[in-house]
Image 1 (cartoon, helix red, strand yellow):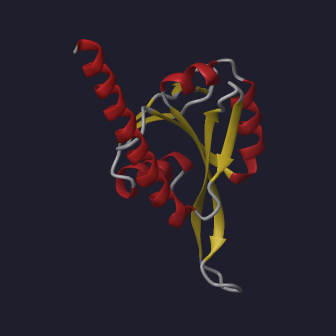
Image 2 (cartoon, helix red, strand yellow):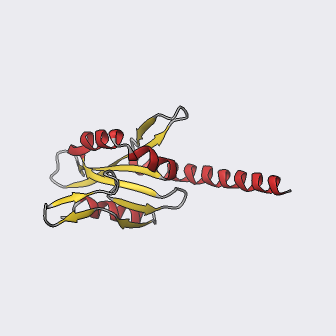
Image 3 (cartoon, helix red, strand yellow):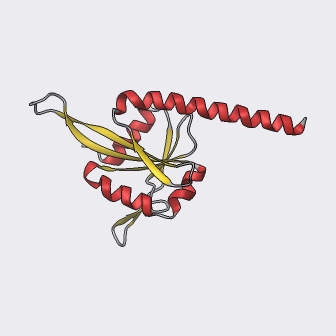
Length: 157
């Protein structure tokens, strides 16, 4: 059986065609894991996004991780430079009343509002909305880059 990090790697590499790396460290003397900035397990490069910080866990630890991320002073600094996701894995039965189950991700994205307040939103139907969201996000990033290039050309000219 795969752990949550292995499931997240599969999700990033196979489904989203991204590149990822581990930034979580294990201290062999205290037998504890240490996250990057206290909030990030993995860093990923996904088309259409800035550098993505990803925290993966089970659904039973979702509330604790939300509170940790929202209260951490490094969260806003990270969001100014990259994107941040919390991936919570939950068991779902394949058929109602059946014995077989599979794991499905609940994905939460963190962002800074226009007022400068830290907030988050959850993808409800992951399989359908994630691809749509990726396409929209990539389109917005491309438009922003074109605007920046246009501004640079106007300044030079």
